[in-house]
Amino acid sequence: MSTMSLRKDHDLIEKVLKSMWATISLLNTGKTIPDIILMPVIDFTKNFTDVCHHSKEENSLFPELEKKGMSRTMGPIAVMLMEHDITRKIAKRMEESAQVYLKTGNSSQLITDMTEYINHVMQHLWKENNRLFIMADVALQDKKDQVNQSLHDVEQLKLKEIGKNREDYEKLAYELDKKISDIP
Picture 1 (cartoon, rainbow, N blue to C red):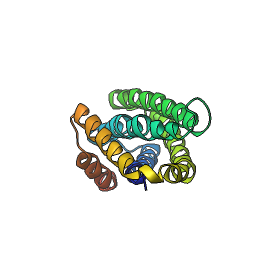
Picture 2 (cartoon, one colour):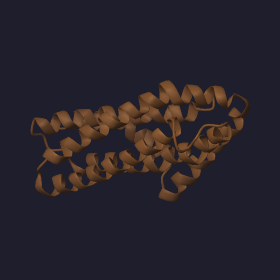
Picture 3 (cartoon, rainbow, N blue to C red):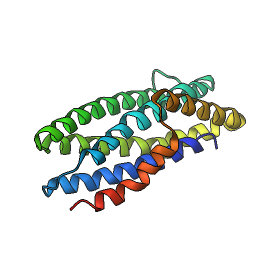
């Protein structure tokens, strides 16, 4: 499948979203979330989800779908691009509210922003997994190796630009649950 790499990204993103839900639960009960947990989550939303994953779609998958006749200005690609922009805006607000929380201990806006981010991204991932990626796998069947290589190349470039690697983010996603469950 030409979307396998993107589906793996979605699995990783969903792991972090589940940890964010757990974080919200802790914040709602008055627990303190340390910056060593909160800031890597913010980094993940900004750099892995947006810079890496969205770039793979926007710079590789979407252009290939356009070559197959899918419009960038209307239809699924246009919706995904609009939703990527919304994700960026919510993530920026979430980063700001995380900074306020870390300085003041006031978690109300952070809880609101994290909830909005999770709900938005979960709906977005569902649309991609259950609509766009199915269409893409059919449309790009004859170019799957080329698309997979392009997705890989974009990922490597974007991660190099931010000074990270995929293993850093995979480790974070898998360790967050443990770190959150260890909060007293």
